[in-house]
Length: 389
Ligand SMILES: [Zn+2]
Image (spheres, rainbow, N blue to C red):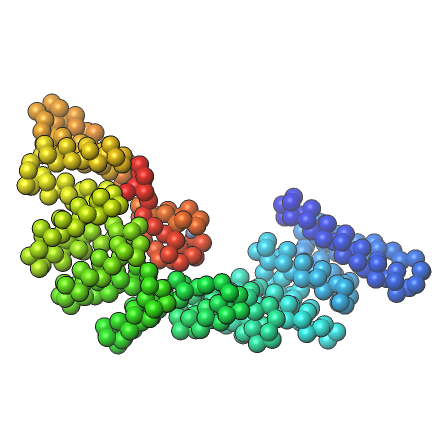
């Protein structure tokens, strides 16, 4: 047991001792009452002797449950849960719920706490049952619905997640339309595997009804249209991404190129990329456009284009591309040195993450629609600036 926790536990004990003493004093109407009773000291001894299970038993026995001590029981349970000692929190909350003298609201509060204990312990079915009871009671609906959403996400129960999110929106007035759109995207992916593209497309439409800027729905539909060789429809979906959220433009540059190429419309593709580059400069666009300029006008023109873009928006990957182009224009010795520089910049790029969560800062090389760290939806985006796009 570390020191801060020990101090916190001792403070809690002293507080419990005070409550017991205060209750005793009131009950005995002036008779003297010893706050440091034999049981109390025994409990303290168990705690100091790192036997918290025995200490919890003593506290539960010592602390009579009445309207004035319910909060103390809940605080003690919360303390144990925060420490990751969920078993002890469960025992405290179960003991609380078993007491007949609790008011309806207090019982619901204790049920909510026990539901959270089971959620933390990973016993999702028990947590779900308790939290559904809480929602049914009409009290503490917002925290209960929030935890139920967590459970349904973990279980990948997307239909229930949608129903719960809709209920949450009603009682909290907090919009969850973007999250509901992601749930529909999850359903689309599932149903495509089981029932085919037609059913999946219906869920993607629902995703866009919920959130018209759901980039993920457009990307999914575009990639499925590509698989069906419907390149015109795929281009429509991918181009919609730039209107929905320009931040995700990087994700469509490559598939758009493949679609235009299949239709024999490469010229339209490069014109589109130039328009995007004026609208929202991106390194990914610079790389594709510089390759095109290299093929059509040679290394000098491509190098000038990249230099111009680097002045406007410096980036490590842009520098690497410039070194690569300069190498084509250089004599043997310089070429050798430039190759060394190119290798170093490439190694640096390899070490850098590509995406970062706007909410918690989690960074990685894969685009996650739900952040693996903070579990927020749609918060992971490509990194901008010197080390990114
Ligand atoms: Zn995050």
